[in-house]
Amino acid sequence: MATFALAVGGWAWLHSFWRSELYHLTGEAQWVWVTKELERPYPTQGVFEARFQLAQPGPGALLKVCADREYVAWVNGVVAGVGWSRPGFRLDVYDVSHLLRPGSNSVRIEVRSPTPVGGLLAALDLPGGKKNAVLSGRDFLLVESSGRRVPAPVVWGRPPRYPWAYPRPMPRPRTLDQIFLEEPVALSQAQQVAPRSWLFRLNQPIFGYVRIVPSGEGWLWYAVGREGEGLAELRERIGVYTASPNELWDPEPQWVSQVLVVARSAPAGVEVFPVLERFRARAPGAVQGKLGPVPRTRWRFRNPPE
Image (cartoon, helix red, strand yellow):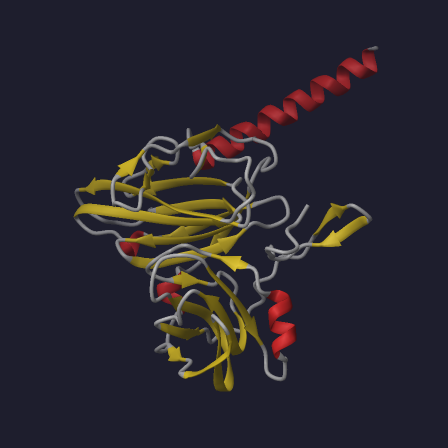
């Protein structure tokens, strides 16, 4: 009994330690989500926005984001970061000091999931040592299609929260606007390969982020392909969904030779933003599948992670 009590006490101490460590990073931020309709399986997308006043910009502004399954974050209209859920769930930390300005500021975070269930955890430190001054669950409001801003329909609560546990902080030294050193390259060679399916090609492969501009609202699927891949291979990987009427950012930088887009109408444009550093974006790791451990990188609509 003494050993059992000691083990329980040790677990409780470790649990409280990690709670305090995470709260130091995200404060009172809570997991939130975009819809209460969780029974019917369907892909989901939504945008949360926080607005705040700032007397004087300066160093120390940190945006901390974790989302299930994908997110895109804009600060004052500039894309700052993109990401997706990793093993153990990562809390991406961006220094956004250079994107803030005196007076009115805004942070918009789009979240996407292949199912109606997901979560967003976000916190923003402001200059002057104001830690966790802007938080999900309090300051980030859901932007409806009409433009009206409303409180989050679902508040899952403060971490830890199943299945997200304790997001692991992963500092990002630069935001996307600092990574992009070259002008985007448009994929202009569009070919309609099937009803509601368009294939865009490049003359030579480029390593970077793909941005798709839809021609209207509604569903959109896409797959990014390398040189030499056939249409059948691309179709097997299709599965990322969005309902964003403005733009879709693929959160994974990769070698791009072609992009297959399936939508109600041809997209207004497809671009690749070159990244000079050939870094590896995929996160190593595995999760327990039905037949044993399976590798986990990005989610796919047809084959989401366990």
